Image (cartoon, rainbow, N blue to C red; front, top):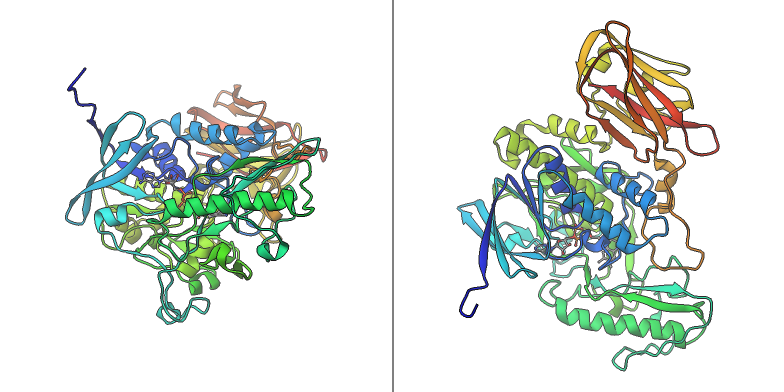
Amino acid sequence: MKGESILSIIKHKVEFCVVGGGLAGMCAAITAARHGVKTLLMQDRPVLGGNASSEIRMWVCGAHGNLETGLIEEIRLENLYRNNYPNFSIWDSILYEKVKFQKNLTVLLNCSCNDAEMDGTHIKSIKGWQLTTQDWHEVEADIFADCSGDSVLAPLTGAEFRMGREARAEFKESIAPVQADRRTMGMSCLIQARETNQPQKFIPPAWANKYPDEESLAHRSHRFFPNNNFWWLELGGENDSIKDTEELRDELLKIAFGLWDHIKNYGDHGAENWVLEWVGFLPGKRESRRYVGDHIMTQNDVSAAGKFKDIIAYGGWSMDDHHPAGFDYRGVPTIFHPAPSPFGIPYRCLYSVNIDNLMFAGRNISATHSAMSSTRVMATCALLGQAVGTGAMLAVKKGILPRGVSQKWVPELQQALMDDDCWLPGLRRSVSKISAESIVVASQGDAEVLRNGDERELGDDDNSWIAGEGDWAEYQLSRETELQEIRLVFDSNLVYRGMNNRNLNMVCNFPLDMPKYQTPETIVRGFHIEAEDADGKVSTIYCAENNYQRLVRITKPFTAKRVRLVIDAVRGKSGTNKIFAFDVK
Ligand SMILES: Cc1cc2nc3c(=O)[nH]c(=O)nc-3n(C[C@H](O)[C@H](O)[C@H](O)COP(=O)(O)OP(=O)(O)OC[C@H]3O[C@@H](n4cnc5c(N)ncnc54)[C@H](O)[C@@H]3O)c2cc1C
């Protein structure tokens, strides 16, 4: 074997290439692939999910009180169903299978994008180095999406980007500093602990920092309780949040082990029986390069609730602007500036102003530092990813560039997103022509609501048909018709779960009496679909005995003149569950 080159270049040709497999990149890639676009996802880590993965372990947060649906809800519901005693390896495996077994999607793990070939302002291909195989992978594509957080394609392609905080006057942002600077929010190495049934000691490494008194951890909540999340273990906002990462990781580890030493060995912090379970050695990043798109989202856009014509997603987390000095700042580590929930985010923030086939989703969208301090939370990033995947699908199918979608196809983009269960505040999903033109009746109650296009509780409008076991709703068509799909939306208890993030997130710590995860008791468990043909023959075309999802699509073609949804089993003690939509196409 001596003398043989171990380096080879493996070439791929796809329609859409996504760099970075955090929640944004995953949602972009899965969505495009589900819509039939040949897609490749390049991810530099062995696991998916970015800051939500087992390597970093951040909570997936989103809009206050307005839980996100679409792909992120599908993932969360899968996790609630399968990950009964919340475990990060099971969470990782759920993210892994969503991309690994998705038709039309190739995923390259352990593959770090580090080169791009340009044709003027057009990306021809990108290249990545795969650590495990010692291969280069070169990917040609029509459209690229950078979901790497750090915007690796910006320096490689010449795409315009910003880094640091804008001056207050530039966009008239009241929370921005008077002078522009290069400061960002910092990065963190988190810790997690596990409760045992006897006292446990901790001997710190000699190199850990020392925090001998309470004063040294002032304003840093560290009394130990299961849901305490040590997000304030943060540094780097006054450094270069890309180039200085390795040195910052070393400092963050000294702080992390020093904190646990303080909790265990310097006074009673309620952690007598707790052991250190895990320390993150890969810093989770909050902020670095942000792309410039056709629109730059600002504090004022957020505060005005983002009433954009080209809304494709929404946010609703406060403008959570961490002090750039992070842990080294002795005062309160962040300011939560209020933001309305929801606020709309426009499509024009998702593609480059100067590189014609480059899109982006995640914390790197086209937004000022101030606006980004809200849009960066991961459920919002997931919605942005789904919007990029849908925008890329339209661009590929119509043979146009991302900006072309903005010019002509926004209504189609919005309808496609809503059909995939993404809520766009202020808009309503169009039901199919067949559903709209048929008669809808039910065993009890008003079934009209099943085709009103609003698919969650909105203010006083319940928007649901409430059914118990044996209840049915049906469409009576004017004649026997060939149908391609039945689309159903059940109730995953968005309002309750949206309050204080109930039962949504992977855990911070592992108490002995760990709360068990389970499917919300509001989701219909069992149902079947009956179809009657022109001769009056009735057949069951689909039967679900253990449904745990909100959006259900049945894509088996059949002909019918009458289609009936029958509820066979509900969850919970009330004897009824809500159904938001029933559409035949
Ligand atoms: C400590 C901390 C606490 C936070 N707290 C919360 C919270 O409680 N809730 C919340 O919702 N958000 C929180 N955030 C913010 C949130 O985690 C980020 O804004 C969000 O993860 C950004 O999503 P993303 O998909 O853009 O990036 P990421 O989640 O970072 O994903 C990007 C992915 O791209 C990969 N990648 C990077 N470079 C390359 C490359 N060259 N080639 C291939 N792949 C690459 C990375 O490995 C990563 O997997 C927190 C952030 C931090 C750091």
